[in-house]
Amino acid sequence: MPLIAKCAGVEELDLAKNKLNDWPEVFGILQQMPRLKFVNLSFNVLSTPLREVEVDRNMRWQQLKNLVLNSTYICWESVQDILDHLPGLEELHLSHNEYNNVYLYDKKTDSTPTDSENDNHSETCSCPSEEIGHKHSGIRILHFTGNRIDNWEESLEIDQEREEGGACNRNYERTESQPESSNGRSSPHDCFRQLKVINLNSTQLAKWNDIERLSKFPVLECVRVQGCPLWESNEYTEHERRQLLIASLPNVTTLNGGGIITPEEREASERAFIRYYMDKPESDRPERYSELIQIHGKLDPLVNVDLRPEKRGPELMKYPSKRLYSYNIRSGDEIIIDCKKKPGDITNK
Image (cartoon, rainbow, N blue to C red):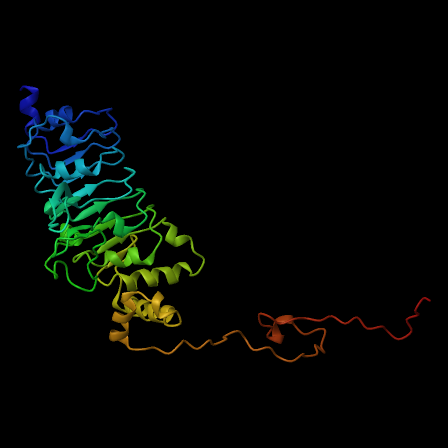
């Protein structure tokens, strides 16, 4: 049987560490395998932008569910383009690709002249025309370990081209308490409507606000976020950090590979979250604080109870033959030995 005929039935392909660096070559290989469900291209340098090379734009791998592109240095624009060819993709691995930010919008330069009836020249507004692409709508699992993202708002680039009046608005932010697209404009979270698992280990996230934004993915259930600068603070213990994470992510059921978060642990974490922020200035309290106050109400501070054993008064050990354990010695007790002189002892002077 010819090799091409054998390839037609292949469902899993691992091409990791094969020194591939040419997109037409990669597409030429994949084109012989229309039934692929899993492809691993990790550790092949594929940094050339896909839109700059000649490939068949009409090729589709309808059954491909899992694509691994770790350490390929694929640019984000190429990720956007390759997703056009994978309409059924559910799991995407993009770890260690040195991403500083991620653009979820297709950017096009648009120069729109503005009315200037009182001027002798026309002004031009040159800003990117951004159309959100729902190419990620089927992705359920996203691995993003080891990328240099230091701000989740930056990684979900949410600049909006214009307001209703036509003026440039370079700092558009949707109110996070509103549901996605509730204001008639697209939100970055709309791109990942089915995202259930995200791995952000070893990124540069350093603010609790970035963690809170993860809660806006509507069906996110499992989060891994370890090895980030945020955890280097000595302000809280590991247990307190886990409680703050659980309280910040109300829909997440599994955190950092641990067991299922129980209702009891969630309630305890939410109450700890309230107490953590209750003494901080109102300006430092996250939006989640107000939400939890509505659920649990305002809580009283915890009482500091000292459970250490009570110290007893000194007791003279009168009977040298008595067993030591019979004195019921407890942790913290002291034994003071007082050497007394015997009658008839002569002190040398």
